[in-house]
Length: 151
Image (cartoon, rainbow, N blue to C red; front, side, top):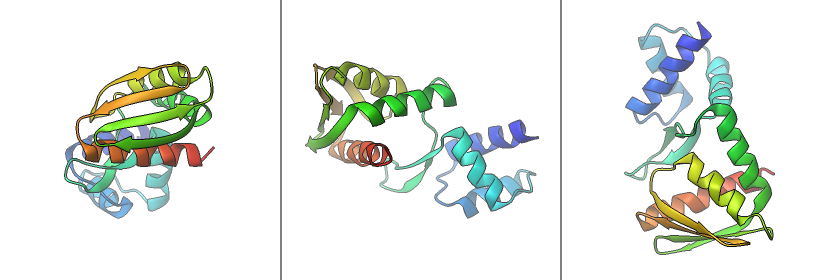
């Protein structure tokens, strides 16, 4: 039951611009899953579902395209521990890391396969990330700052 519910949840989030847990609860009920808000909250945490702005600037739930929830959490941990700051100019992000950690953080960012990122390049303590748009760069800054503020 749990696996089916979580699979349905992922499909609904990919299909619809879900912005609240209440919306997700309604969609799940329409799909035959009678769930509480607490269950949805636990599933969101377990599935590593995050909120991010979409291409229309709407802040909504989205699913990262990492290999698995465990792998995604590993990538987040690398970013949390390696990154010190991020800023952007135009569509390019500059990420400052602890010395020797930029390549690991860059590999973690690449592995997450975030939409809006064209490519990245790492040195010893600095990463350059080329984003498709200035909005994508701003979204990336917001996401990275949220990750590193939760250290």
